[in-house]
Length: 302
Length: 302
Image 1 (cartoon, rainbow over the protein chains, first blue to last red):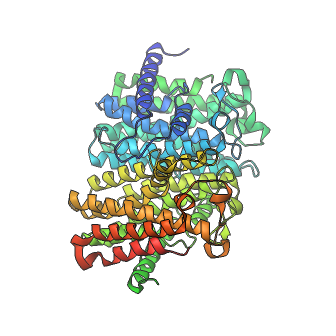
Image 2: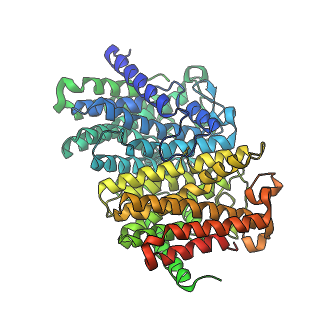
Image 3: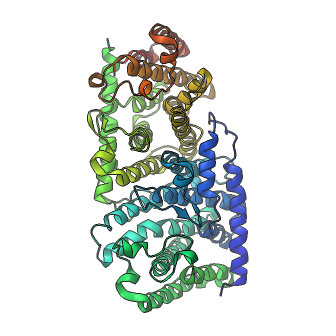
């Protein structure tokens, strides 16, 4: 069962970041923009304002709060991160990639707007993430903005998420070994979740040691997130998931749950949660909400 | 005929930025990256190291030099901009977009590596641009990095280049009026060229008045660039162009040369060059190379 305080704070963060994204993805051009084509804005909104759980934004907001970071800049960084996450979903769903028609029970962007528009909407969301970070309205020092820009770019680029997607494509034709699967997943989903946990300490100007600790926490829950996802793909049905289930197995993709089975996976998830919680021990009860997040990530049902 | 000093400096800038891109797109992961998949790196290199003229990098380097900006940071900004320009070509060439098999006489990225890899290579190049700007090796103050990041994101995102692509797609089914064509082109190609000319003053910390002047210069030559391009599409053949000619007309796309004819276009180009040169009058002979660039852009044959 979901911790009620966690559930409340997750919904609060989701509501706040969605309100901000709704405003950021408005129709009016900003200074330095020439015009915002209606159709492109609509496709970007379709890809972003679609009722996701907003776990990554939550992690940004709560890791910042742990070190006394203000909510306002946290939400801007969270919105930037969510633009990256959502662009990756828009492009992953394309016919040339995973070829998915549904995302959270709704038509994917290319089903609703066509392939060309979906490609552009993804590109524009990716670009907008860095716009949001750099904007004057993100009330952080230039040094912190630059640090966040570099970390976000590394987490999402060729050595992070995009690279992970590349390895994932290759895995359809040649199944990687266990080490290969671990690297793939650290890149494909782990890197952005780790960024979410590093963002808070950077926003708040926390000590290097705290940044490292939260980075390790992010790595643990990133791995737990992917294991839980792969386990759901193996054991759940499409209605519960809100997207096609069993796709990995159908494509012959190797996952750790497929390799080691459900019992091993549940044991591994429990270990990861324990490790993640232990990393937060120095922060006492202030970190309870992040510990609850670790448990939620490992035990989620969709 | 091409001004020999301009030709020399254009080649110098191209050589320097290509050497840097070659190094940046090496196989080894950087701090914060997990691994660089070989195939993704190869596709990114194919999309970037393909013998382009490197006009945008040249403009960054030379507008910086005009105000005493150092070459080293200029080349990093130029490399970032070229990553954006090249990502846009990789995605534009995709079957769902312009569906081009050839780019500068070579197979496009999706012809050489497949569609999925081309999508990811474009995404990774886009992301890498912001990585390059934010990196410690870009020896600029955090304030200037943030200013460049914001300008580059606005020039290339939903209100700039990506938005222009969106309008261009729409123009295939519903021909825009003259004002619509001007907006489309200011976004699709103008915004990045204007950014190139604004980047120098920002890198060098020039006065606001100089930034505005170079921004206006960039707008003029951006428009000239597009007019020259459309005129070539109308009057040249595929062999000279190194890509398919007559595509705009075949798709029923409206361009100003198609609307007003060759004589009008040549007159307009002459006016734009004159305006662009006039904007640089305060800088005397120091700006001769940029004036030569304006003439080159307007009179180019491919």
